[in-house]
Length: 248
Image: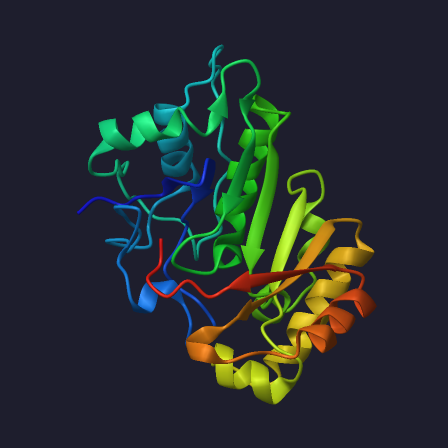
């Protein structure tokens, strides 16, 4: 099985950087399915680089005037000598990708989101986002994240994303620390407070910031009004994501 680093969903292009995550959410789609619309998102390894992601992106949507692009060295924790990974069924997926783009405008939106937490591959993410902004400047870029990155890296990484990312969507997942821990099952204590601090940092740094919750998991209902108030107080928009029982 080859690594699918770039995939399509609902007319948008998604980038699947890693299967590692600092949450183990009870409602996560990957608990029930290996794929998204036939595109397997479990990776053979964690060694693919920014060059690999860019190669897959360009294979499905070549830049009309390709130019050499130098990828800066990755940090030692993310660097590996992995060979280029091309997904299975590339022809079929490539055909699907034609629905993601407008022939006159190019890529409309790219989202860093897959079967893992994308900001755990921060250096790779920044290099890929830089490439997209240089080659497709009209493209909007979003990150879907659990909001743990500042805790992981022991610094505020949000300013590093300026000029690269347009929207940051953070999983708030509940109205309290206890509810968050029950639903998200983070690997460290105090995660809910870290998430809220991350959301505020994103808003304070001028990003379009969205705080999201998953509603309706196996009949469970959240206090949406209270969750929305928390998001508003942190400077974020609020989004309710309905639980998808059978995945995509």
